[in-house]
Amino acid sequence: MNIIFLGGPGAGKGTQAENASEKLKIPAISTGVILREEAASGSERGIKAKSYMDSGALVPDEIIIDIIKQRVAKPDCAGGFILDGFPRTVPQAEYLEAAGINIDLVIDIDVSDERIIARMGGRRSCPNCGASYHVDYKPSRDKKSCDVCSTELITRDDDRPEVVLKRLKTYHEQTAPLKQFYVSKGKLKTVIGQEEVADTTRLTFEVINNFKQSGN
Ligand code: AP5
Image (cartoon, rainbow, N blue to C red):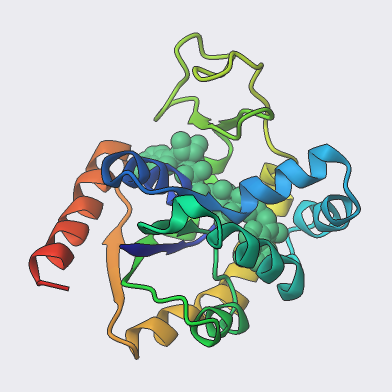
C-alpha cells in the first residue's frame, strides 16, 4: 500500500506517518528529514536546500524529485511506502504519475493556521535522528533529550515564528492545490487534525482501514 500524507507545516504529517509506518510495517519517507540529513552532512545539495528551507520556501522540484526517485527504488519500498511531505507541488505529483509510481491513498491532515502557529512554538526535534516531540502534546521522557538516541533536542531553524508564517503562505500557494489534484483522482481522504495526537491517529486508521475493507 502506497500512502501520501498531505497537510500544512506542523499539521502532524510526520507524527502520523511514523505511527502508520510502525503499524503497517512499511517505511515512512520524509523529504524534510532527508533534506535536514543532507544539510547536516554538508553536501552541496544539502547546503543549497537549507537556504530554501530556512527562508520558508520550497526546495526546487528537480532536487526533491531526484531524492524521491532514488529512495523509492530501494528494496524496503517494494511492499509499500508512506510519503510524508512529498509531493508538495503539482509538478511533483505529476512526476509520480509519469514514473508509474502508483499511489493508493492520500490522507490530508487538516489543521487551521491558528492552531499550527500555536503548536509550532512547542515542537522540539532531534538533530541526530529526526524524531519530533512537543513540549505539551508529545514530550520526550526527560523533556530535553531524544527518547530514541539521547541527543539533546533543539528547536528547528525553520520553526521560528516568522518562518512558520512564510511556510504557511508557501503551503497555501503551492501545496494546497494538490488537494484538488487528488480529489479529481478519487484518492483524497481528509482527517481533521485533533488536539490530541492519539485522536488524530485513531481517525487516520479509520481512513486506512476503510480503504482496505473497500477491497482496494
Ligand atoms: P518538512 O520537515 O516536511 O516540514 P513541514 O511539511 O513544514 O512539516 P513539519 O515537519 O514541520 O510538520 P509535520 O506536519 O510533519 O508535523 P509533526 O508531526 O512534526 O519540510 C521542511 C522543509 O523542507 C520545507 O519547508 C521545504 O523547504 C523543504 N521540503 C520538504 N519536502 C519538500 C518537497 N516535497 N518539495 C519542496 N521542498 C520540500 O507535528 C508538528 C508538531 O505538532 C510536533 O511537535 C508534534 O509533536 C505536534 N503534534 C502532531 N500532531 C499533533 C496533534 N494531533 N495534537 C497536538 N500536537 C501535535
